[in-house]
Image (cartoon, rainbow, N blue to C red):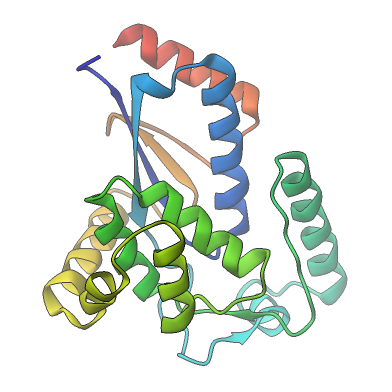
Length: 215
């Protein structure tokens, strides 16, 4: 089918609702059996572009950024853990968990796109952060993820020192910001319409059914 539905997912590797949103979208796609009728591309967004290399304790970070109390955070984490469980994804929150800088991860996701491995790498990095307690800003963790999905780790990691590769990610981030994307996940269909947030599976099914019929 030449005329595929193009889906851009603007998201971050360390964004829990992005993971839940994608897993619900994936479930909708599978239930409708339309995998071959669409094409997914991940677009870069940093929740915390100024996150230092050493990261920041998640509880401190969320309290600073959103003013959430510890009880509110615990409740929210439980909600995400439950939602993840329903979708076969494990959120393992712990007190020493640290937010990570994700810029390098986005550079590698751009690299993975050329090999049709973007979604696979995205989910591997997300799992590393949320399920396996790993710091996705560290090169050894990034290397492990690249190898896991069968990419050339040396070639990919060389991109992290390429000004051109970094600029490409910055330009894409700016493009989506200029398009008005300021919260993630934002899921854009054919660059015409969009839904934000982790919508229910049925909502995604309805949107996909309508858009594929229009194609």
